[in-house]
Image (cartoon, rainbow over all chains, first blue to last red):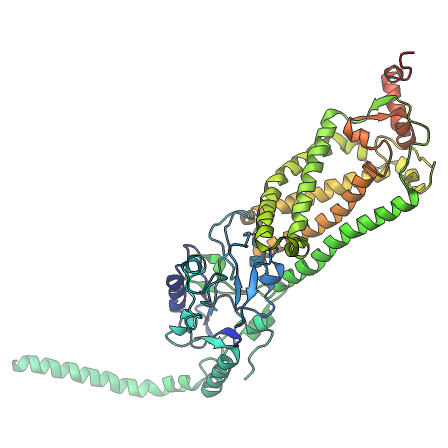
Length: 198
Length: 341
């Protein structure tokens, strides 16, 4: 089985936000929630870079460690998913996440925010694959259809890569060697404990 | 197409060619600039991480209308997760387990602390209805809060395997709601008990003597003098007051995150909340023990509000003197010292 990861090549990202839009559309994500976002660092300054960020599907995910009801699970593809039936909406996963991935449908007090929602790596949830029940809660399950996450698949500059960690790391290294520069695999050290060294 | 028009077009073409030619003259400077690595100044994650101090995050600008989404990476969140699943969980377990072990040992060695003289049958009022209301409002709500709070920290380890995911989730949802809505009752009880008891809980010389004699807890027949509250009770009072205030403040902040500020603030409040709750649980378990099975006659004080005169003389001698001086001794002696013969 593959170890699925995301990698955003910030030297290619043009901050078009198509990944954000595609994600919202693909999964009918509720109003106010963005499972993916594009953050621009040093905006307007020399060296400005944009990075598309979502749940990184961490190794030893801190959200899963702090969840009081243990609603997270990791698939065979190393995708971190959760059960909205079990989630109590406490917000601990949001405290723990280094990437701001967990979000809640309502702005409110502890426990009145509703069930947590986050990027599923287009892999649905605990319900049977590609069912209506799964779609309503988690959005589409492209992985079950043999496809990769839509955000990465439709990225116009191929800045956002999704797939097996070793393969996308290799693609990124090749790019860096070819063009002679690279601002790094953003979030990898925090999420997977290792950066890509070229 | 007439000639005039053609001439106009030719002129335009000439102009374009001229501009291009001029451009070629200035081109070398542009080309020189292009030879420089365009990413020489580009931000890298490594550099930003090095620049990070303390618990800050790498952040930028987002075009979606949500400023909170502008944070990119905040590695420090993992350390909160580590503390929550490590220190807080450990302290919660340690507080409960050590309290039970210490008290069980104490019970085995010292046994129940009995009234040395027999019960006199004379009852004197120790706590008024308001005092008892304050106490039980606080006590009842504390137990609900402590159990539902412990469930958030330990339920996953202890209850989840027993109940299964669905049942445990339902239980925890209700526990969380109870925790949220019972909180204000605890705060009300805390405030009320502070107001009615603070005057009796200021430390004084008598406390030093009480502490020097170990409160009479360790030896049978030893009864250091005490006023309405002895030094041990004062410790409980101040632990509950200060700990309760900390729990109330952090609790309100956690309930209304927008009041509290940023994510770092929530994390700090959550850690304080968890650690103070664990420490206070230890204190309260000891308090429940000594107020119930640990000491004969003690529960009456908060039960009916009236305690036996001999119990009071042994444990709160100075207070009894005060009460008797105030009431002129008569109300006490007529209350049942000499039942109808």
